[in-house]
Length: 134
Image 1 (cartoon, one colour):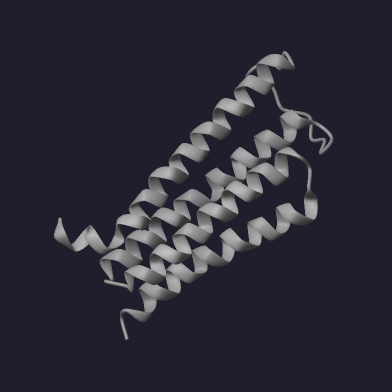
Image 2 (spheres, rainbow, N blue to C red):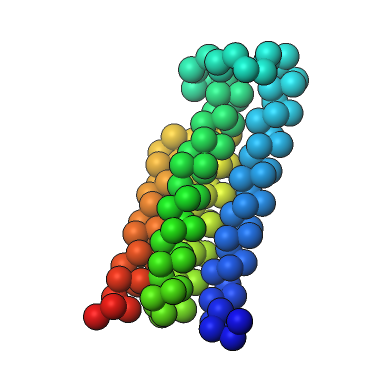
């Protein structure tokens, strides 16, 4: 799999992204247990609730990880510039981790900025893949 060598950082980011999402799952489960939340019942929508915020952080990560995988596969199989893909991938991961912590601590403006970083990074990965076709 020699062709994947230039994309090792991006592959690492995918693995680390999976770990971050797993960690978010653990955190929301532990908070749910501590707050005696009954599994299967809706979580009250209240930004003052750590359970709600941790659940939303997990849900938001779940919403974007599929895009990360699709855009990354597209960019790699299109032979996009590996350094740009790696850079955008790392920025995505930093944005997701920042979003997670800002959501937990209810830093709303910083959370939006972190989301924007990950959102634009995904688009950057797509553009690098697309540019490889021209």
